[in-house]
Amino acid sequence: MGLDSVRIIPNVRQRRRLRNLGATIVFENLVMPASLSSLPLIAIEIGGSKLQLATGDTSGFIAQRTRFEVNRKAGAEGILQQIDAGLQSLLEHSKPVAVGVGYGGPVNWRTGQIVCSHHIEGWDGFNLADWITNRTGLPAFVENDANAAALGEAHFGAGRGLDPVFWMNAGSGVGGGLVVGGHLYHGAPPGEMELGHLRLDRRGAITEDFCSGWSVDRLVREEIAKNTDGALARVVRQEGWVSGEARALTPALAIADRAAAEILDEVAGSMAYALSHAVHLLHPEVIVLGGGLALLGEALRGRVAAALPPLLMDAFRPGPTVRLAELMEDAVLAGSFAVAAQRLL
Image 1 (cartoon, rainbow, N blue to C red):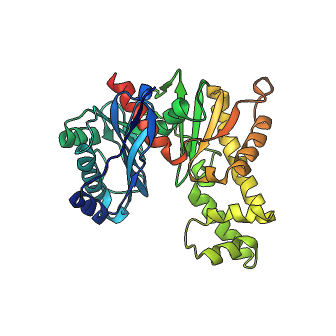
Image 2: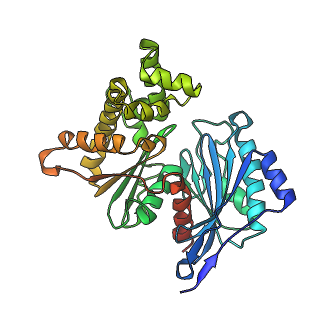
Image 3: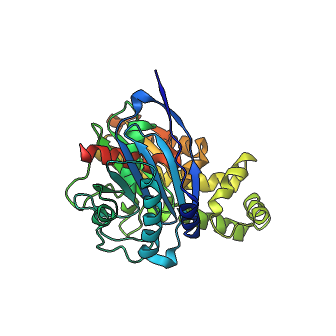
């Protein structure tokens, strides 16, 4: 079987423009079997802090990616400038047939219009699909980023061969996605699997209040304020972190720090409680945990898997398998390739 090698290198002028806009250019230079090569595509991931563009195909293969750090103060216009620069560079070296987008917020997936952004101003009502088509001449398809990640893990990652697949993303926010029979379940518009906004009590507390990266950062800060000489405090001081304190849990757990374990027990318990509602309503065969908190690995997965069954009615126990995402930061990009392929065909 023959092999195709893909390497796409922007010219000097393009590299300069991309870097002026805050890009990091990563040449994957991957080798893939020719039999997996099919429709060439572009995928875009638009998050609250990260922007990625990639070339690839319907196998989920990523040939090249360009990363940008999002400047929130520049708003949607700043992100569009970065996307435009990335697209023009990619188009000079590839001939894609469509563009798939995973956007970090609610969208109208039928029209490609952004409903709003909870993090960055200037997106409300903007038709991103039309804008991309006008800039590239290619059909463009926009999905919520959690939906795209769910589709990516279902086709290329931890959900392969299982059905239905439920995705929980716990990062800067909390999202969810459901894949049934290989396709996303949307429900009536503007419905999505908004797991992060699932109410956990009648006073209005939602999953995102307890299970997002920011909420875990807060719990770590509160513990540091109470115990300035504890393991978490020492790690944060040593690393000089002024945000993203949840990262301190991993080294603290490695030395069996009790406070770190208690924080993770609390977070995993809240995740399991939210997921128990999804299980009772949707009955997935597998739950895939992704996002930044999934980098905690087995320490998180094991706790969620243990906390979930007691929350289920007897007939549904032991419940679905709980797995960590396999694609991690590639989930949205891989899923965006799948979004474009399915909608194009």
